[in-house]
Image 1 (cartoon, one colour):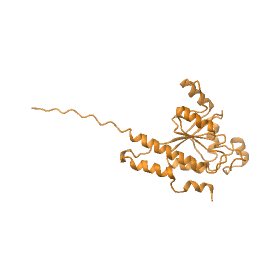
Image 2 (spheres, rainbow, N blue to C red; image 1 turned 90 degrees about the vertical axis):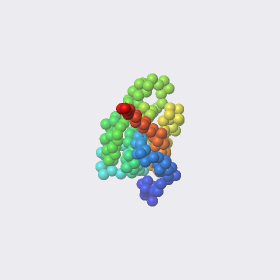
Image 3 (cartoon, rainbow, N blue to C red; image 1 turned 135 degrees about the horizontal axis):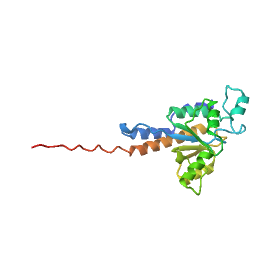
Image 4 (cartoon, rainbow, N blue to C red; image 1 turned 120 degrees about the horizontal axis):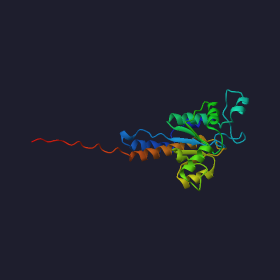
Length: 211
């Protein structure tokens, strides 16, 4: 079976949960909240060749060695599906890769990202908040709803600092399905929260009565 075919399977348990939440909302509140999702690079999107299969490209290998790095197999299909669901795609790395380099690298595979957080931007966000016990990543500082990483340490930081993390290991061939399931849970949570943010009733206009 093609590894990408798992993305086209029927709704999972969390998918059905999301559908149930959507169905329970009033019609006026069923407009979906856009999920902003970020991806780590090292051992998440860019994996060593002996850890996982990589995406194929029409460009020569020498071009990729000069302009980028191997991209984990399944990334393109996953990003297409996330875009179809209306998600905003970001990259969040603790490395010093520049935003220009990251965007150029992913564009070699036809992938566009909406934002990039690297070590410099991360440090500025921590300094602005005066954090002494600084986490290695702080997605909530950039309104990121879900972060995808290979590190269990980042997941623990998420518990301490209040941001959502899904951990995917380099050897996991079903990593894309794991990400989609996590996005479905976050989407359901956002929709549920949105259901309580009902607009305040319009003020009643005063009526003038004449005798």
